[in-house]
Image 1 (spheres, rainbow, N blue to C red):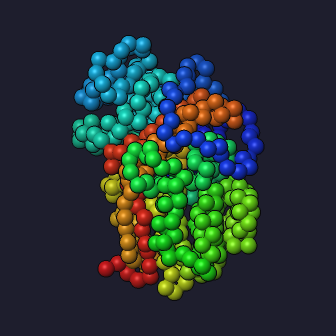
Image 2: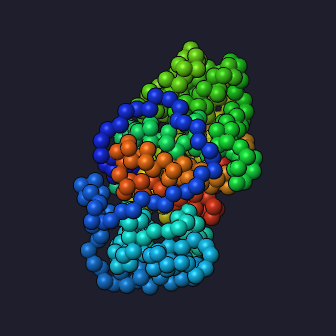
Image 3: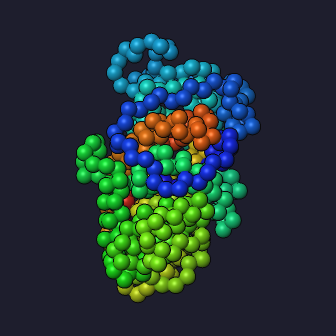
Length: 445
């Protein structure tokens, strides 16, 4: 999952870089409620668009009130007054400040919807459930004529978020360098920040760490990594795939733009006694050197940006020795949805991953073929990502005291919980998928 514009401002003081493995915790955890936030208490310096609802726009607000209210009623999501007992089972959305809620949506669409949650203007007893219900009907909730006018309330992506070499470093820094301790608070002991592969759902009888190792092993097998393999990894994370490949006898060069990740990955590699087999480099994928028997890149393409997908696949192809194999794990969405998202500033691009875009399968096929690669295998695991995100969200909410102690305020915590639940809903509704692909030399058949 792969950076925030305001996220880094949600921390009140610097934190020390974590020195290793997070504590063992069970994989099925009671979910705590989101921390209460009063808009009057939101730090306007850190969260300017959360602290202040947009100025009144009566027509837009009225339209939002009509269509959003109708959608919530149709999906039976309308919540009771605070403290009252719901009249029916299922996820509920409770409005604390309906006027601000509708003003935000009327002015900023889904960004306003998320910012309203961050401001504490609405809550839910089942956030992922509410977002899943909405995601399943996303194309039916707004009439087609009004959808064609979406340009009136959505804004374009900031040009400052482009993934030039300097921009990519800054975008990576704004997400992955938040704090190693923050990520340790909700990831499993492998510190793997991408979809696991489970044997069954829900994951009650295996650890998340075991499911992450299964995912990594499938990618290593897909790329035919073994003793003596020269492996290039694009996107180090915190080093687990490199560690597992080196344990097979491979010689690994792994690239990242995150200084925090690189430092902790090197510590973990040294602790495992594998420094002689793994070289962690702070390097852009566009500056790859040498040829490799195998290339693996896990959920990296989403951070590249559509403008640079040709350069990304060209770099993959150029790094491959004759007869080599490329294993990718990539989140995907439908092609039309991707085209709409590419032109839109979204909640995720504003607060979580500036500069990023999830590709469609068609976009992956087109750009990989243009670089001289063919798809030899392609397998989806969307339901596995939904389960992975559920476990991360449960761990995060349970670790709220720890996260607060790191200096991340309640607005940040609500933002992060919304991000995890929003992503989970995308996979549960099948709006998103995650796929493992094998690319080899040649053209598509």
